[in-house]
Length: 115
Image 1 (cartoon, rainbow, N blue to C red):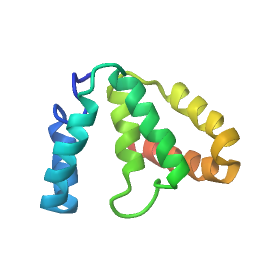
Image 2: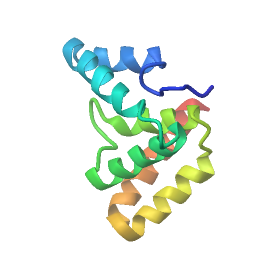
Image 3: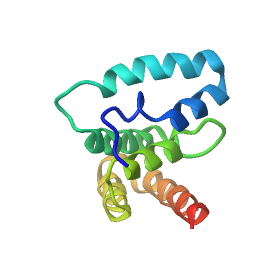
Image 4: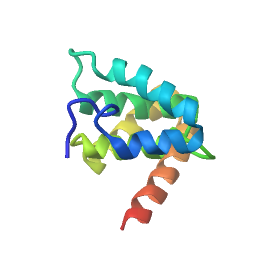
């Protein structure tokens, strides 16, 4: 299930954002939806980029953590688990091994919860 716009076309994502805070969810949907609508980078690549940013920012745990949503978004856009794992290995070099380790742990939890 790939979307033309991974934010504006994903109602579950929008409801998840609104569950954090109604105004926050609306704001994120509008602003991120516009960015995701830019035409030159495909949706799968954008989703993988967001995971890389989560690694750098260490946004993989806690309430409102975007990492799980970004992993699910990437999978919906056609990324494979192997591609996400390779991305995390690649990020070891540029973001640090400890940051990537935490993301591998969170990724395992996400995948195990979906099984």
